[in-house]
Length: 348
Image (cartoon, rainbow, N blue to C red):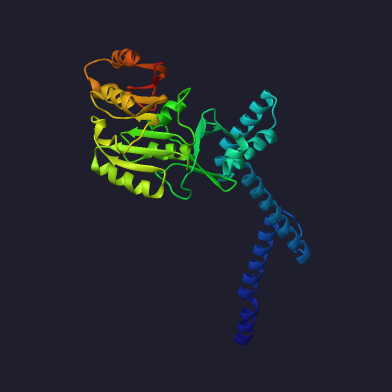
């Protein structure tokens, strides 16, 4: 009896391992059912699982793409102002009745013109009404040139234009009083190919080099100055130009160089002295031919600083009219301040 009781007792014990396994399986099934939206089926095929996963992934990627497209990019933010400016320019061109292509073509044509090597030929390079001087029209105005007597060499950093293997030197009016008078429309200067010129106050030879270009091989220039320092540089220039000669003399005493300088066609003076008008009249009486031309650049500040320049110029005009006949007179501004230019001849 005791043995049977034991066996019955063993048989009556509950199987805990089986109950635990069953409870775990039930929980898994319930969790799967809840994740699938409360479906009653406890199992699902592998193909349906994969398809559902792919659909979830696709939907997520679509949402992310839509969100990124709606957000402005960094480049777009930077380019908004550029796009607006481009639209405004197009609107203005439409109002003016012009297309953007026409405007671009104009800009390209300008850049080509700037990059051309010989723009003077396209604009027109002609002989000026004053013999030995050439003119050219450009955007900044009229520029004057002289044919170089010494090709390949530069005197004072002037611009050189080469046309058909001939060099032309641009005349800078800010570094030459005679050049400033020509730029201001001086009617006559008396200098032409073959002329003989006496230049009083030649300095280093900036203006003398252009006069040398004009007179050519048939003419001659005597450059006079009292300062040894500038005369030394002028001597080096005369070594390259055989139609010029230096004179280290004082213009107050024309008798010192009468044995060297003959009668000349042109007397030009650029001397900043108080008695510059008297110096000019003495040299014209001594060296200027009967039909010759005299030119003087008067600096008012060198004569009297306390007086107005116009008063001094009127006084100089009266003095010149007593001895000479004034052919032309004009100011040298804006190239030279407080300067006036006179062109005179002997009275008949």
